[in-house]
Image (cartoon, rainbow, N blue to C red; front, top):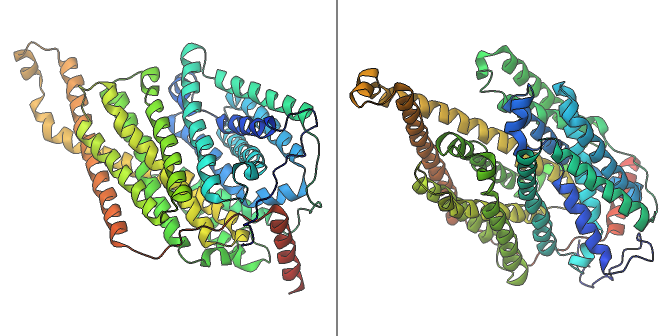
Length: 531
């Protein structure tokens, strides 16, 4: 993967001549931003959707996991489609797919079909983002340096996540929850107009057909991710193993996992090759990614309970916390760039910095958590969470690229993103939800004896008001317990990192040229056919 020291001249020949050279990369940055703002359904409008439709919270979260699974599973196909179709074809197809999915999603009530639409939207979303970013790499770094590419990429991705939530909440509050879908459709129409007018079909290398792709294997891996997501997402609703639904889903997931592994070893070109799993440090990175994502799931469970049940914040008030998270994400990306590219420090230490920031989030939230605080007192832990998420996301991807051959890198990204975006989050949410149920039941049993009609009448306080204050108090105590245990787990993880020391290279290898990637792909397929 060496030989990238000489800078390559940057050009974007897919644009028509009348488009200024300096405006071309920024046009693709804008298009990538519009793709990242998109989604099948938007979590910022969850309360409005639940109130107007027959969908439960679990149904809407499953739409999110289906969207993320579509993004994750599509990674191994990104280069194959890039070598087969022109950039204009791929971007127009992705924009059209996002447009159609956003038009259809608000009107679909059949859940499996809605999940499928969100899954397809995720595939289109990652296809559009990749096509834009892969064509401006030389603009960001003439040597295709990942320590530049990943921080810039995450500024767009993480920034768009927070802006999408803010925008969806604002549109739902002032207009209607499906206005976010209409807004995204408008953005896709703008993208299609720009692509139609300003770009042309152009090939940088000879067309390579879509041969040797294990389509069935990809579907099986995607099905496995969705089954795991369904199992942990609906587990609390169905009361886990007391429900035959959960038992059947668990058996189906086990059978699918066996089919995935068996197919991986039995066919010539599996979707995820066995050699991909043999790289040193890959499994520890995947385990660490899962553990960290489990801890980050506090955002979707504990924070939601605190802001809704204890503080009683409305949607617009709660959305104000997206701004400090956005500030933390941007500062984390810039800090990662400074650490890895400018200073070229050991990036294993950068993981320690990220975990330390996550510890700060849990500890500060634990110390701050109360029903009598001002919302501004929550800004610091939110900044810490955004900073930790950005630093760890950038560093994990950089570590995965460093230890792997580029041929298997995008296969590992599929596994990485399934654990990072789907399985880790849904497992963590299930753990936090179960913990809160146990803590709430225990605290109600402990303190409930002090609440009765006699005590209320003695203080001339209505019983309903007493019960409301009592439940808010119990929720607050339970949340403190949950945050405390999460802080213990995160501190233990930090101590393990501080005890671990390994020689890690400071200078990272660069991304190879697309022509070399295509050549390696052709040679790999040809060699395996001859063998």
